[in-house]
Image (tube, rainbow, N blue to C red; front, side, top):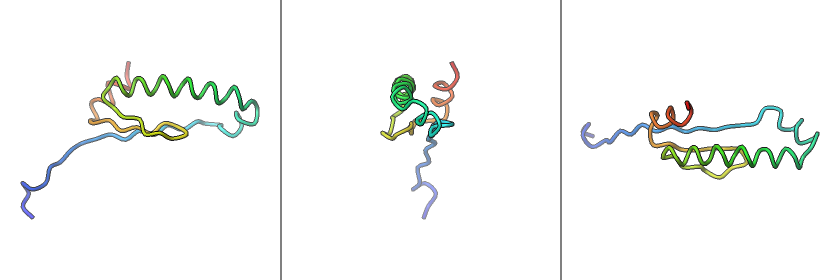
Amino acid sequence: MAQDQFKRKLTTIFSADVAGYSRLMGKDEAATVKTLEQYKGIMSELIRQHRGRVIDSPGIICWLSSPAWWMRCSVP
């Protein structure tokens, strides 16, 4: 195949997890779920503001159209 038939596109995929999730859930499940939903809402809004798309998951998985947008999103 000729080189001009390929279109290269840089993208960024981000995944966030919670350290100590099992311990937090065991200690106070309702408070942990409430706190995580608040954090997820804040992060989701920041990701959308920076041209990203959140993929629904228990944590956060998102796609941003360029690494530059990820840097703008992650560094205030």
